[in-house]
Length: 284
Image 1 (cartoon, helix red, strand yellow):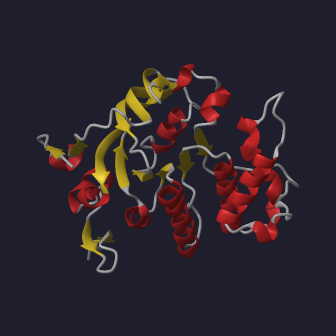
Image 2 (cartoon, rainbow, N blue to C red):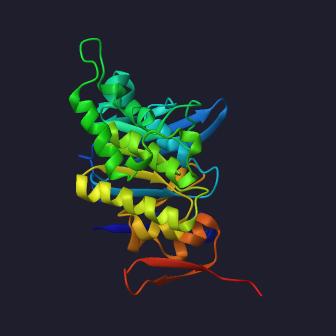
């Protein structure tokens, strides 16, 4: 793995890492992409190759463009320039249903219709596989059952969504995207507002999906230590651009935390997992 460091004059404000490993064969990538909301450009000339297989975590300060990037990759948002490439072609040139067979997106804070039950919501993940000539099948039923089993929600399959706890509800939404049976899953802050134990359980589940099922997961996160504990690949964003990307141990450093988050912290190594952990420095 090659890892190149770019050191502008003001390293505190504009320090930047760049991975120079070639991933041109990656199934999903952004090529010089810019995205704007109205007159406000959120992402400016960003390029990123999503590593096939494993779990990639995208982290960065609020408003840096993490969620915008995820939506652009899922074709929810148009690009102002550049392109999102899926399997060699522009994702924006593909039929919606074809994209949905390759990419599943779980947005931030999804809301289910009132009265919808758990099994009914999970079954929505099979929509891309339906057509006028292909209605609900045994394959669909097996996909839904398998997703519910993987997320351990079978016990409340017939409960209404609103009757569940926050952690249970997130498992149901994850089951829905698993039932879609796509090779690529994009999840926008799936652990936000959840207790640490629930976050750990969910990330354990997602890592298992990536490693045991061979799927590619891209997860936008706020919790730095949780991201460092579970990700295979880490992307750090600031002000609409990528400041650092690569293996967690190489990217998660005191220098990058200062450059990307303006965070003064010590980075230690967990003796059991070998993973980095940041400890903020408390000013006396």
